[in-house]
Image (cartoon, rainbow over all chains, first blue to last red; front, top):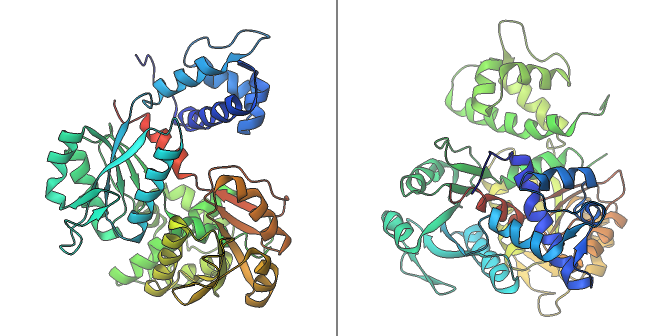
Length: 213
Length: 213
């Protein structure tokens, strides 16, 4: 289905467009949206909107705009969010717990979120077997079997830095291609795997630069 | 002290260099580090390392490298992390709680983290007055007084989307110049205020694109 490699910068904006369209369809009673309106709401220029969406075929009609429902559905398909994406989280500390609940809440509250944490892993014997929002925490050696059984396609890493690479290796070996890493360390993965690192402590230290201007 | 406006891209890499230097000084018994070594460990090219650090004066010695201790201390000063940065968090839900604990743990465990959550705010009467890690949760109308008293210079927003802009306005009115926004919505602030948005649900939806290649 995918014809050419789409740049990460474009992919980054697609969920934002999807969110704008969701809100738009709830509040505005018209089936069409202009690139100007979509751009304004997403915080990007209308020409960039048109360029981004042109990657996926001819959605818009000159001088008329985009069909909101059609475009939203197309974006969902492009992002693989037209069906549920099963997610595994490794490292059920305070951040891991909070993220699990956060994802579950969005899954329950939003129509098109479609990401669902279905498996939790930790290496602490005191945590293994415990239940979070109905999910039993498993040991790390269960990762391959669980990934296969639940068709898990995304991994969240919330372990301490020294364990992050080993956990990433386990997820990759189990066939996962998309990883969100919260550990404050860079993890290395094969080329066909995509890792995004969200390093909260680096973000905060960076922001400190602007804290006393 | 700051002579010229440093680009955000440069500022973004400085905490990473600081972290590399911290680790380097713990494991390698030499007072110098080359731009090659620093770049390798930070995942950037040596020439970019030299360019970045040249913004802040002549640190390096040709063919010798950078003095690790001196450079680390300079980076701390540049990032305003040579003394403690007091942080306020607004929205003590599951994500807010986890972040508070996460920041406290890094503050206690790391020598140079120097960011400290000293005030918590929520508008839920059932939460106000409760105690998290020794900090009493206050109502939002206490923000100006607390910011003044504790010299708070950074705000974390972990409220639901519909409240995020109002909370940002309160933080800005209290004089805060650096905000980390976790609410899934864009907040607008005056030009002299710096906001970074960490939108976990957008990140996950974006990653979904790579989840089934």
